[in-house]
Image 1 (cartoon, rainbow, N blue to C red):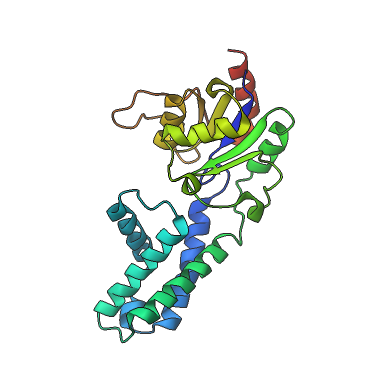
Image 2 (spheres, rainbow, N blue to C red):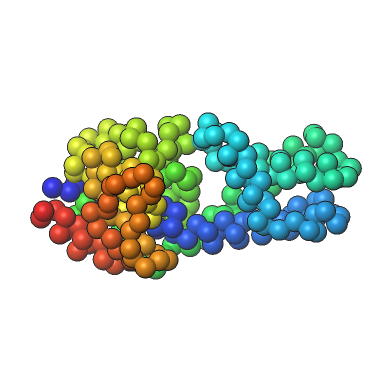
Length: 245
């Protein structure tokens, strides 16, 4: 019997790619104003994203605080500008990295960017299931109008472990006092959401918003979702069907 339905956030309930791009555009404009010059003019938002991702890769998963990780990414960008002939010192760059980080998160959450099917789905399910958010991200539901929907909100960065780690699924079970087989995770990521849930004894519903609706297992994995959907409009019936299995 399904009791708890947990949702991934990014690209499941809201369009994170959209809000991230909007935030990086704002940061880039601010950076060009603070550090005018040819090198800064040549920067693109993909360069900001690449610097952040490279920092994350080098840290090999040891840095779970996403705000700090974003700041370190901006610091790397500023360091590259300084190495290319910038006239600013490390102290000035550290202060600017902090400023850019605050700006990024401010602009990221100005637009909820909820997918059109998100709110109707949550309203439909709330009377029937215990709802939660299980995310490797850091977007607080109350900042985007979802604060009243979730009984459990679990972020990887708060527990220093991330999906698909079994431990983060266990946090939800302890919070809600439910067994693994009473839980379903709805998410878009084949490894983090589907494989992670299945290996934790949960059921998994994979949402494919951009593809052909065909689930392709990550390399080396055999786990398959219990259901595949292309819209959250389908979720209510899917959960009913799974409960009857």
